[in-house]
Length: 160
Image 1 (cartoon, rainbow, N blue to C red):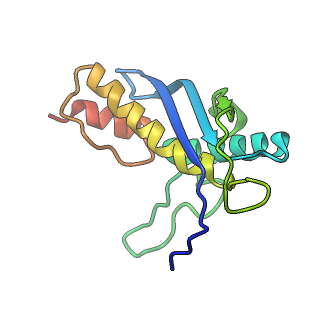
Image 2 (cartoon, helix red, strand yellow):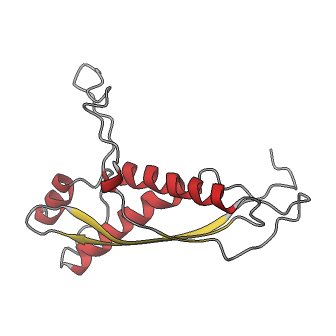
């Protein structure tokens, strides 16, 4: 299925992190999301949508994990066991929508914004962690699984 009138938003996400070499704790110092959603009809709604998506994506990258035991029983099936971000787990963001390339396939020139924050933020966080590991001398680390928990980051720093 490849209709000629598909339209896609575009975006670029950047994240700067600090790693605690003693514990592996990741702290987000700066996070910037820049998106082109075409003509934005309601800026406040779009801003809220992006902020919610960023919180979801950062939570996925840093906290959320489905864990199962050897028999396939879900171990993280409740809010007691499944870590999701709280307000104090999520940094302040810089969000920009000033780049506007109107869509030519609809009369309003709009593009979708529904999942932009949730799609762009996990790779931004993980890549920032790998970059910070490299800057800290751990150039052997080329991949780290999500969530980038302190234990995973610390283990990556110890591996050779």
